Length: 513
Image (cartoon, rainbow, N blue to C red; front, top):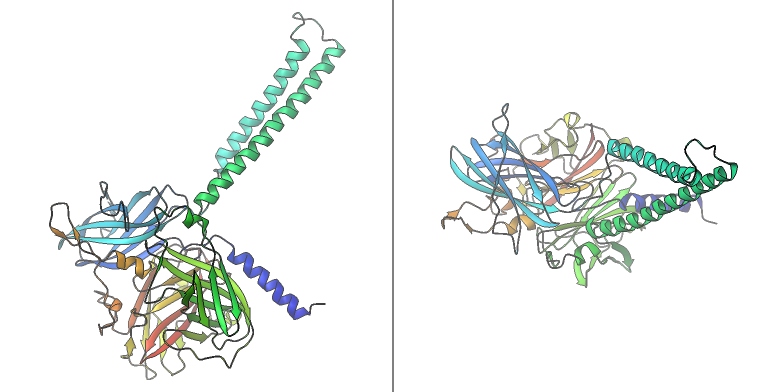
């Protein structure tokens, strides 16, 4: 008989499988795109709200953080390949009458795949361009509006009842002279006709519903995005991750280039989070050792059940976040982590200090969250800014690039409904952004300012790690543009590099509606 502990672990595993089987994307449960970047002399915070179904209309919001902008035009194109250069006519964004530095617009996304929202900015300091990578995919099938469904149901009921009554009356009275009493056999025949008609109609409706459901399910399978399945297992002292076949990607081979490319110098970013307390965190980078097979030496882990998240980027710029879970026994004698791999122990989330704005690092330094988390709202874009201080309280001067970035921020909803791995540029994968860093010739043959200006924190040789043109940010401050997709309890893992050592700060926030 299984012990109580074994039953508890089994129940937890089943719960994790259920939670992780929900709709996933590049980032789990966080489809909106947030990007902060420079377009020539202008700095913008851009939000692209991807439609839940493709084709669909994306909502684009732009907040000018630096510079004076008078007009912004937007257009959607593919990132690479056919359709990446020949742009249709651009749409002008609407300027807010109450805030002239705020713009909103809409764009049709007609196909699934890896796209860019190209923005042409015109202002006091001339024209410039900005391109924001967007992964376009159907997230779910859309339900009929309740009002429309109710009206159609009522009309269908009236139609069915009317048809039954008409056929019953036809059998009962069609051969009688007007005013002639209906004999009992005719009444019986009429009732039989009504029953037969009702059975036939409901049979037709039942079979029609089965046909419609099968067609809808087939369309959903073809259109609704699903990340490749991921099987995670131990082979001796090696953690292995085997990617499965992706039906969604396979159907789009002509449009999607599926080869995996490095993102921040690694083909895969692999995260382990011990559940349910989120008190152990690992950020690893397995090597590809076979056909879609990745291998990582088992680190010294604390035993428990771990949620797994694995990020990759395709050659087209399309990102995938694959999910799984694994139960690991404690392995304190395993090989220590090296290179970019890192780990951190965190307080149990059941005893979290919600809204705390300071976290002490093991060496005595500490990190401050400069945004009041109690003021954050779901689906409202914000700059999550952090300040790193030495143990004496002075600004840290030993910040170094961690995989080419000033920092990495992993955001997890307590029930795993949301996972996001973001950077100072936002939620876009850096590999996709780099595909847009190429010179382009404008329509008049001149060189256009078409590439995004690279941020200082993308360049390891640059000493200033603050965000470009962020006059309010010091060299020891990092901000991340993001909007929490739903209310609830979140844990944030902020990773930076100080004097050659990877440091991880943990913050907890309750996000309101």
